[in-house]
Image 1 (cartoon, helix red, strand yellow):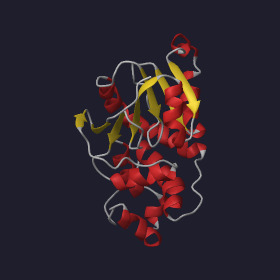
Image 2: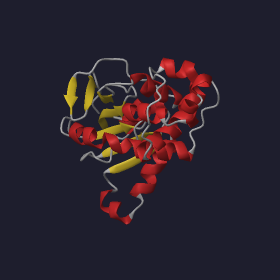
Image 3: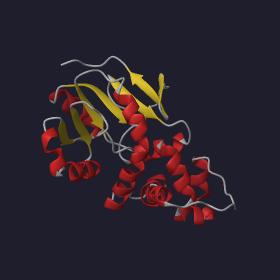
Image 4: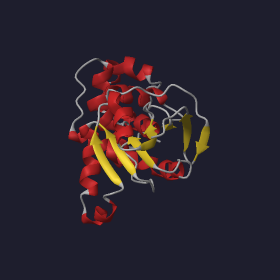
Length: 221
């Protein structure tokens, strides 16, 4: 899941090269100083962008800008959640599903009528991807709506959603939330930097490559 990649990317970050300047941050997220060789390939480097340009500024209370480089890196990292999202598809109820974009930019794996909700910046990769003519037959199944996190429930109801899906980010019930097994602190920091709240409950189900929290007491429209 994305938290593991963030931890690997942290080892490849510029901040890690200046560990003494950022020791407080690395202690907070539980990453020790190591002298061993670090593997820094495509996903680690994408995660390093998120750490350096978004999580670190947020942690030190500086302006955390959700730049296109950060969004593109999150889009690349979100591909690691594909097996979990595909497994999640099998436990979702019938009907429209509201997918809340946060640390993971995901949801195209679901074989449901789907409404994508979240900040404009996080929805841009999905807009770009689904603008291809190949998606024309599916336009009735995919709705993309810019939404503040405080408006998620209201907008989901407007589109007739019966449940929410998210990754780490809290969502109103009925919600299915993919959680990280390890390095939760990094996922929580990223979620807060995005302006959302991390889910604080326990997992209730285990699906492929992930733990899943089911937040009950949801709405029906």
